[in-house]
Length: 255
Image (cartoon, rainbow, N blue to C red; front, side, top):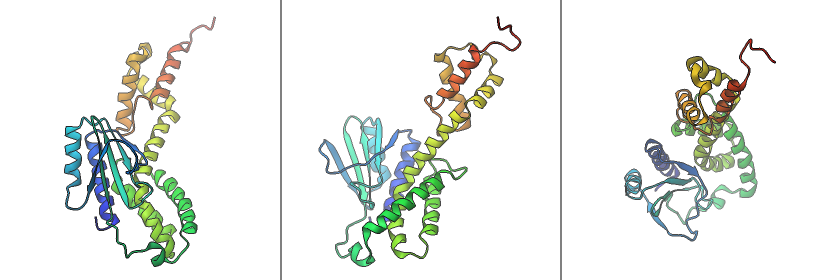
């Protein structure tokens, strides 16, 4: 592909497709040179990335996908490894230009700037992950917020801006995962409140066993946050309801 923007667009479109198909995705560091029976398909603009992904999903009994926004640490390459009956990897990145020496063109100490960008990246992750109303699957919105944050923090420094822009694309999926983690932690923080809401609408819930209770709590959490609700994330709510079931009834004698 001709530039990082093309790569990132293709990568995010593929991730959106996986979300739509409800294929589990994990964030991973993928090495294309690692030993193993992975069949690698290098994707360029001549190939429809989504069509390639669909064919793999439909023919290889895919169980989950390992997504990497920096193949072997290369910020300009992306990969998706489909784990199923066979291992199929899609890899796409910017075409290498031998005449473009980043160190010569930029004229700065890369190690020094990289250290600053790592610190900057941590600030951006915190800022965007805390932004209200952003859903984990809305990669376009996350990308916009990341770009805005990097542009603000690196304003006026050409060296920082160049490295930061390459890092910005790689952070999008990491931030999406962080948003999911924070939303799920929110279920635990509000466990008592959520348990009371469930109890108000389902008074018989306190008589349910755990086998029946866990799916019910999960379904309720999905009405609050469809993307981030899982049975595991709902366990603090389940335990809050169990505690209420074991508590003495109001007004009951203590002895």
